[in-house]
Length: 316
Image (cartoon, rainbow, N blue to C red; front, side, top):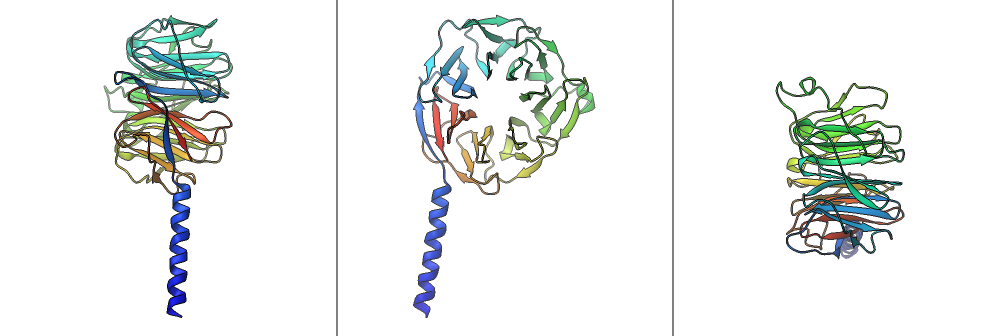
C-alpha cells in the first residue's frame, strides 16, 4: 500500500512538473543589432509592424515579424522612444519633442510646440492620436499626427502642487477615449467629447507601460515590480504579484489573456491572466533589458525589443 501511495505521489509531482514546464515561456532572438543600437518601442497592426529606437532607428515588418527591414532616410539621429501603427497612420516620437509622421511612404518631421521628451504615442484607425512624455506633457491630434495640441491635465488636481508627473504610457481607442499612465502610479482618462480628465488609479511607484486590449482586459507595469490588471477596460485596477521586484518596462497580452512583461534583466509570463507567473528563459533576458512588446495578429508569440537592437520572439 505504501509503495502505491509513493507511486501516486510521484505521478502527481511529475504531472505538476509537466504542467509547469508546459506553461513556461521561452525567448529566441529574431534579430540582433550592434552594441550601440537600442529599440524602445514596437507596434503591430495585423501582420505589419514598426520598431523604433536609437539613433533615429526604425524597422518594419510586413510578414508578422518573421523578417524585419531597417528603414532608410529617417530625418533624425535623435532617439525614437515611441511608435504607433494603425491602418494608414504611422507615427514615431522621441527626444526634444520630436514627432515623425509617415506620409506617402516618406517620414517627415512635424512641429509639436514642445521640446520635452515624448515617451509614447498611440493612434486609432481614424487618425486620432495621443503622445505623452516628460513633465506632464500630453498632446492630441485629430489628423493622423500632422498637427498637435496640448491637452495635458491640470496636474494640481492629481499630484502635489508644483508637480508635473512624467507620463510614460498612452492609449487611444477607436472612440477617441484617451488613457495615460505614469509617475505616482497615476492612470487618467478623458473621453473624446470632454476636456476633463478622470483619475482611475494612484499610488507611489511609476508605471512605465500599459496595455489595453479589445476585450476589456488591461495591464500596467512599472517600478519595483508593480503590475496592475483591469477587467473593465481600465475603469478600475487591481494589483498583481508577478514574483519580482525588477523594473518592468513593457506589457502585452494575447486574445486568450496570456501575458508577457518585459524589464531590466527580467521577463515574466502568465498563461492565465495574471493568476500565476514564471520567468521567461532564453534570449538573454537575464543579462539585457527589453522594453517594447506586442503581438502580430494571428501569432501565438509576442515580440519584445530592447538592448543592442535585439528583437525576441516569446513562445507562450
